[in-house]
Amino acid sequence: MRRPLLITAVLLILLLSFASSGQPARGQGDGDSPPTVYDVFLTDDGDAAAQQVLFVDARTGLSVVVAAPGSDHTLIKQGVIYREAGTGFVRIATPDGRADIFAPIPPGQPNVRVDWVVSPGRERLAWTVTVSDGPNLVSDLYIAPGDGSGAQLALHATSTQGIGVLPLAVGDAGDWVDYARRADLFAPPSEDGSAPPSPRSAVDEALRLDVAAGASAPLPELPATAPGCPCPVAVTPDGARFARLWADEDGAFAVTVWEIGADFSAQVEPLATDYERAAGLLLSPDGERAVYTLARGQTRLRYALVVANLLTGEQRLVNDRLDGDLRAAAFVAGGEALLMTGALGEGTYKVWLADGVAVQVSPHTYLGHIG
Image (tube, rainbow, N blue to C red):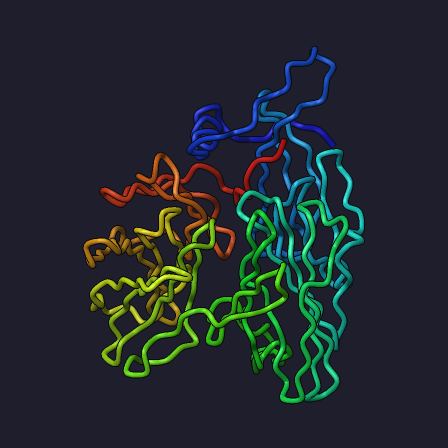
């Protein structure tokens, strides 16, 4: 189905300016040639059954709309993969209007959990299949090119204590995969019937797999004198730096970053606020800055954005009135702004780090562009 998308030309120009460099060139064919570059959005108004993926021709503004009800919508090289609501099947929505089974990744079942991550440049895809038999868990981690073809088994792990494997990040070259060992992968829904929080939102034991060597090494942990995790983690796109977001015994939030394979670490001074929770940690590509969001309240929620300078050790509140539960998706505009998307379908925002000004550029969630 092809129809005009209700995004003004101004908003579309803002979205196209998000990429800092290296955006693929558009096709030079005649007017009958299909578009070669799409900006991809997810509509999400809280109703999973009504979700749609929008492939917007970056040149004409026309869109292809694909019904994609489910969760974990992730942009890969050919389209958007997602976990289909009600079935557990993994499907892929593509710009030709189809939503087919994505064969490389098997469906989830009551005793089978499936999780995936894609590399920053969408050159690699990694996923885990964890099978539960009571306290006995078997986890297999696979890695494949960005289209899912030619998958190889990179890690096989077993546990008699209910501990499974969860992928965290994968490098574009496919030479490393970060993962966590978790004991709550099959946690039941909460008492109110809602699903438990994603285990990826907070991590304790994290490791890096050297794919060629088939060996894993622990990623850095906080000193024994510091409050423990689970806590949010992040890694730079090149895998060179790894960070943890944690709270001290007084509830002040801080970030520590380590250079992987080197004797280097940096930490910002804890920031004391009246906020109770922190999430959404993101490192800048050079690993010198970190951003995260804060939340407080139970019914009337308030959200704030923090930027931490890991070179000076300082951090500050950039915006204490975010329009919802926004999470940083990427540094844009030469690192002077953030692309933020709503965790609960609040849309897509551009937030300037100098003054915290936030501008909604789309009512939908921007997933990226493909060509």
